[in-house]
Image (cartoon, rainbow, N blue to C red; front, side, top):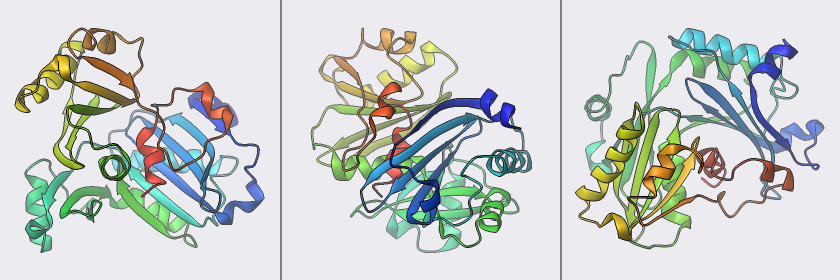
Length: 293
């Protein structure tokens, strides 16, 4: 099984101050995507990210298969199989969510109806989660697999577990910690899902997730949002994060249309060990944002 972990390992970096014997003082964040699993370990006292790892998951067609894949990885991992953490935060990275004003989500029936406008929810296999974002009346609704969540709660039964969505953590951070400048787009990419954020004076005006099949879709969706906002592409600054890199043809072509295109920096308010510098800063931006929620 150790060989399997090495074969699926995407990246790994640890701080020299990471002490596996002090797990009960650390917060663990696990980002779950259909294709990969990312983990981060955070010391609340020093505000330092202590460990960061990513693993490919086998192609899964059901929640049961996903739960099995995660359980196999956790049970054979060097420290994920420790059951006493200060807190565990599960970050759902999927395109199934709805944003709505709080006045629209006053009952469970309202929440389910609003979520179904954007995606299907199977109430036999999923449960609905809701959180308010920042100091606004904006709420996010999203489904979480019963089977996956129940497994985490059973395995880590002595640890408090909270659920978040990647759009929630990213948007919360952008609203609270970025400069309030107009004409700036934020793009987060996970596999073939791209989420575009546009904020003005700290208020989100656009938050949309698109599934793109290739470079033409990628460029089209960005220019579509720019056009909907009545902005000039040449005046826009676009900051991208996630699993996309400067050398990829999507970013190179985008630079021909958009005024300024740059990778994101890791969230401020946290400290990172120098070993993290071996990997691009924009990677797992939403994971690190979760530590600022």
